[in-house]
Length: 236
Image (tube, rainbow, N blue to C red):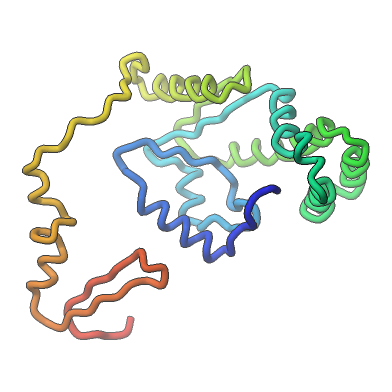
């Protein structure tokens, strides 16, 4: 709610593929576990399996008091500005009655809709958490990561929670968190540029241009992926 419509599943996979291409293997990668769906979009099987197993990484489980989580949900979905927006509450009711009807059951949906009509936002948020927490617990139990770390977050302070997560992860890895620095890495020697794969004089492009045979060049429909081929064209 309050966001742009979700893309089609095909468009989502394209965006995800481009994001994966930008991953730096030398830096930590943080991914929120959204099960095998993000809204109505299906997460590709390989990505989902990767998140569940967290190879060379770990599964971080954050725990926060329910009252803080309820307050956050009310702030996100039922702020004064939101509920005064025309059609907002109606849309919220549709999300529950249509999107969650089968999962919550008719009685709980009826109760939630009545609470929304009465403006009892916190009670609706608590009801939703009760449902989603069961899913979160199941996803956590299905994870195959060899290293799990639980982090207690007693406040809703995002900066403090992030610090707690980093410290817990560092402790799990046996790293002295106090010795960590945010200094930028030293610049690479200029000589390293001589072996740069992207260099027009030494990279794959140069080898391709010097090779014998027919040369074919193509791009994917999004224009982000370019393929260079040498030899006779053939179907695959």
